[in-house]
Length: 286
Image: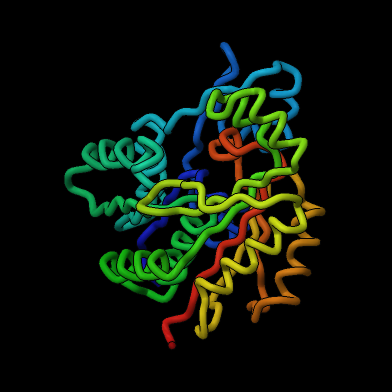
């Protein structure tokens, strides 16, 4: 077994038990409500986030981990016997997390640390971390681990449907009148990741059409290739995620295991409650 530790941040949306199973450390994104500071995966999750939003009537701010948080994670890994570290961060286009990890790595000039800009987010990033951890288990060296993670990232696609425009209005990204009209008309923006950023791709009306559109986009991305891995990501709507899983299994050649994960506060604060997203990774075979 390789003695390379895998570290990521909580914008990877990795379920805590799954990360623990693979020995992956997650450095928390912070959420700030006034004078209160919370750490994703430590003392706040999506349910608590939106309970606080409802209570306060406004959105919190989020922040990348400080370099010191990565220094702590790196040191813990070395103290536990790691000979090297691969750290896979949320896209540098949307967060300063990657920069913080690079700064932290500079505090270990004599240690073997690779900091990787995933150029993606949520479970597309999380699946890269899982691939890295699997490669480490198989005894791969640092360079091979990084290469396998990046290769999986290139084969992944993420599509998400925003359930309400309420939170975009709270953030100032959409006017209140536009958000109200959009909600009345049940407008569901469809998002994807392009060039490392979460970008609007389409707009449909009704949840039913939004879910169908996600599956249609995934099918287009997959083409005639097999689906190697799949994840469903949601924001505080687990029961709906299970319903969506059944719909996806009926329409796509899904793998036996589909990971269901929360979007997590560092990301969900920007899209709001009720988001549903589908992540697919195609196989290397054509």
